[in-house]
Image 1 (tube, rainbow, N blue to C red):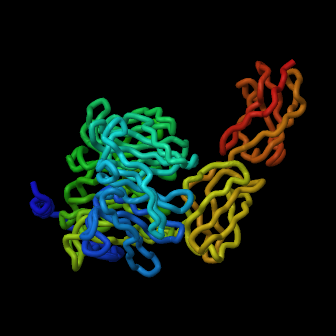
Image 2 (cartoon, rainbow, N blue to C red; image 1 turned 120 degrees about the horizontal axis):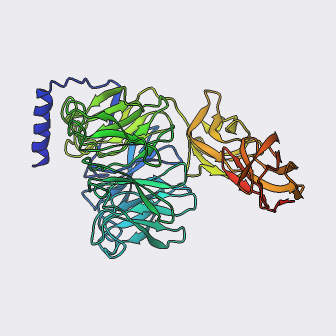
Image 3 (cartoon, rainbow, N blue to C red; image 1 turned 45 degrees about the horizontal axis):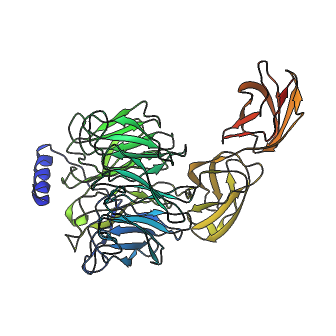
Length: 531
């Protein structure tokens, strides 16, 4: 079936279903891509990333003068710029989109091209300075990556491959440029990995699992992989995301009671798997993208077909699945067939792309925005935990007028590098919680929780019988939740952020006392001897 025939069929079916969903006035077609200039036809994942400068950056799979491109979209001026054009040996057909790195550069992949014609991994700056990090060989390294890699707190990037002789591999590229395959996936995948707040990576595969109909998996940075859910019919294509409640959420293009796909949720362990919504053809179908969460706690996403015009829709759903709404039905005149996961800019506006449509260049697709009235916010860049003094990148807006930064309820130092980027560090008294940038026009709060890791510097006394009061000295101890001696829980009193007094419990054995806080755990550098 051709793409044109498919669109016509969907339109007919939608009409039969009497789907009448009006286009939202808050939807704006910002730009109609031009294949003769910057490029066209973003498919999926096609992630757009917000840079340190507050602008959006992404990839386009094809151009007249090359084999794909990297573009930048100026949010303040609503103008586009082609910042890099691929030529083949450096990469061909970049479907991935981009992810932001610690140093402000972006990471992406090309499906084909590279030195061996089997795909590549690259790094690029907002100014177009390009570096090829790896070219796949279609050997044990696999080939044809669709998804962009993500950078971890350790500085390495982690990604997945799609097809080839050995399809579905997870790889790591260190900051020194060393490439390693770290895991074999349940099957091929086009979905980007994400880092969960537990430090593990999460992703989906289209096949594999108990029923060979797709999986959600968890993977450590060392490559230990666990399937946490096996789908029965859904063939997931898009990624999962972790919401503020800590759960994973995603969509599928197929399956469900209506055969049009589902929206689902689960815990990080895979438990409590719930179908939040079964798509109707009149609402949405064949969603291959992920979801984003707004300040209203609703999840926002797109489907490439279905909806009022049969050409895709933008929707929202709450995290219990009790409220679902179609916000916009795409149509050719304003852009249709949205495949990429929307991005929520820190200004509170949702941005995305369509594969087709537009008012002028109908065949090339569009870049759009949707204003749902969401609150502006700030966002942490990759680093979500650390000890006092750990520098953390923060993107947002209005930083030139910032009056302070808080980690949880405690203080921080900060350095404003631009109106849209700063580096902040928790100081003594900082607590685990969201990071808040204090601004005259309204504080900006991160959706991520920063975990302040405790430290223990000493204990006193170093020995004693059961019932001895032991002073534990360290840093970031205010939120202490447990103290153990040899694994046995002790009663304790928090005196200050630097001091906790614990009583040696019955059954305690000689060893290093361990303290647990909301941010993590730390052991004494010395042993306590139970006499």
